[in-house]
Length: 165
Image 1: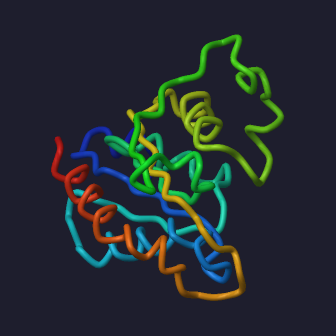
Image 2: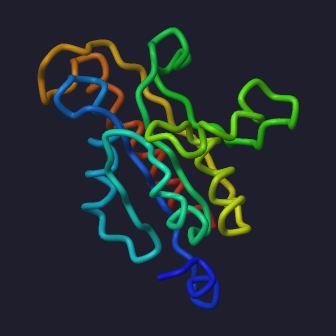
Image 3: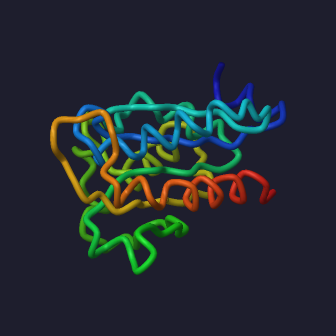
């Protein structure tokens, strides 16, 4: 379905969780996406991916708003082990704002993907990022105890985000 066709209908929120589910905490974004998908909310579409790619641009353009979920180093996650924040457009003079080649690679940032949706479909939805501290990257499909300990709190934050209209 094209973004233009979707604009005539009620737009859904979109949650994109990404990471490597075989590398312990790197898969926390995918785990959160899987949990949110199990809620079966009519107003929420969920995508699980290993990485962000340009093929996601049409879904972004069609979404009412977007939540990107990923892992990050513990020092950057904040005192609670996670943080939820708005993703604001980079200024034109921003570090990667002029990197148009990156918009068409098969590894893009959330901001690059939002810019691609705007460039191709004329719409950049409001977006947030949820970043969760990753304490281990070993070969495992289970989250580390430290990352697993905040999962309930993080999922509650995602539920609240889903309820905010």
